[in-house]
Length: 237
Image (cartoon, rainbow, N blue to C red; front, top):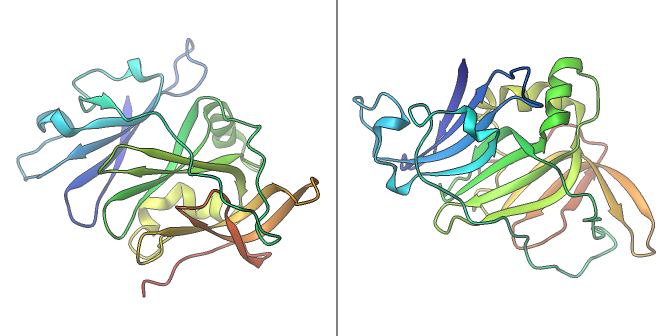
């Protein structure tokens, strides 16, 4: 069986569709597909397979061959992920270590930007995400990704561990929180999150910082804005 959830961009032009399948004995992790489907949409549209797929593409896939062409959008893979240009570090926001690249990643949640031009989505190693779903209570290594709809570019940011409140309450129910919770700044240039970030200080020491963070899309490093915070949201104005 396949379960699915979706979210429309604010302007109604795009639909983000996250499909998850059941893990079989032959699979290491549950199959998953995050796709973008371009509108316009009408009441006659039963599903993404009924929409013209010329402008649709797969954003993230785990065991993609599990999904038949009848149950998933048609199209192309987005362009390879790229990181933003490095920026000078500051004592407030030291450069994170980029040594730990994640394996095959599973999507945990996604959030449309106010300008409908960007999709923020949270990923974690698929093996860890599957184990977390079964055991709970463990720290989960994640990263934020931003897809720029107009260009197909996916920008990946450094790894972190979400706060317990975000991980146990907000992320599993992100669709319910979407109408009232905004991680995006009103101008869609930044987003916020709460959790632990392992950073390399100016002296070369690795330290863990916990609190509320703001990530500028044009910067590589997030900036801590408050310590010890476990829940964060952006004011709509």
